Every structure is written in structure tokens, then in C-alpha cells.
Amino acid sequence: MPRLQVVIGSTRPERVGQRIASWFEERAVAHGAFEVELVDLKELDLPMMNEQNLPRLRRYEHDHTRAWSATVERADAFAFVTPEYNHGLTAPVKNAIDYLHHEWQYKPVGFVSYGGVSAGTRAVAMLKQVVTAVKMFPVSQTVAIPFVSQFIEDDHKFASNHTFDAAAAEMLDELARVETALAPLRRTASNSLFNGSTSATSKASTKN
View (cartoon, rainbow, N blue to C red):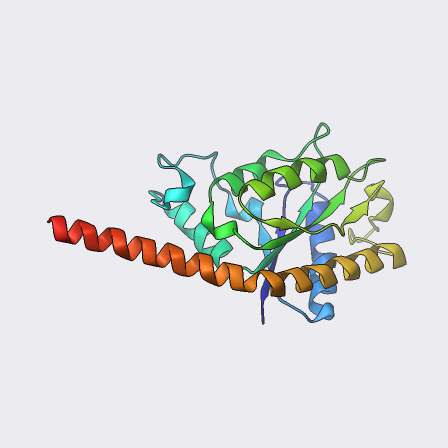
């Protein structure tokens, strides 16, 4: 079964995103098309990009990068749960994406956004430009939650409704369809990367 990672894009102490992500994780598990894994960028605690080499080279010097690489590598699809800061995406999300390159390729991504009147949609618009640069495929279906504070109950849970549940189901349906379509491309890219690394190692050994 393909793996969907639900990524919490806010690292603030009193964030709402964790509650929304927990709701979406439950919806994704109930949907049944994916094995679901929750990824919290706050727990990941990546420093601002500090790798010397370009991400596309995969010559990682730090353990935190190698761990993040392994996490993203095992995913087949993503759902980013993201707020909007000053009409744009959050720094932790951008930083997490920029750390890697090949690990993102040919994987579909959906967005669960939240905020005030705009429901975080301007952050999603910017994120779609970013993810396509690393060959991810954003699906058109999204979940947009406006005036999010109105949907947080006294026990701090996200109080969903039929509209949000239906939007989540539609996005999960599309993520499943696109993931299946992209699977052959991921296999081809993975084989090419492995063969390229093997070839480079062989050449180095011959020279020595």
C-alpha cells in the first residue's frame, strides 16, 4: 500500500495545525487508499538550510539531513497542512522542501490550508510554484478552512463539518489516482539515480 505523509507545516507553540492534521490523518486512514504517517516539522526541528552541497547531489553532511531524506524517500504522496503568514507560505515548510531534491520527485501533493478570510489559499498558491520545481505534482483538489478559530472546540479539537469532510475525501481520491499514475515514473527515476551512482563509483574505482 502506498504511503501518504501528512506534514504539519507550522512550528509555533500554540499552533492550530496539529489539530487539523490529526483530523485529516483520521480521514486519510478511514479513506483506505494509503498507509498514513504524520510528520511534524516542529519535532523534526531542521535548522535553516546548512548543507554545503546542492541537494540534487545527495552528498549530505549532517545527520538531520540524512534522517529527513530517509523520511521523505519512503513516502509516495504528501498532504501539507499549512497556515498562511503575511500572504505567503511558512518558512519551516519552504526550508524542509529546499533540503532535498530527488526524494520529492514524481510524488503527488495536496494541501490542507487554514487561516482567516483567505483560508490560507495564498500560501497554497505560492507552495504550488515551489513543489513543481522539485517535480512534485500538486493536485487541484484542496481543503481550505476559513476563520479557523471558529472550528476549534473547548477540548482543542478541530470541529469538522460535511463541507470539510467532503473536500478531504475528494483530495484523497485524487491523490490516490495521481499516485498510481506516477508510480512508474518514480521507479524509473529511482533506477536512473541508482545506476548513475553505481557508474560514478565504478569510474572512481577504475581511476584509483
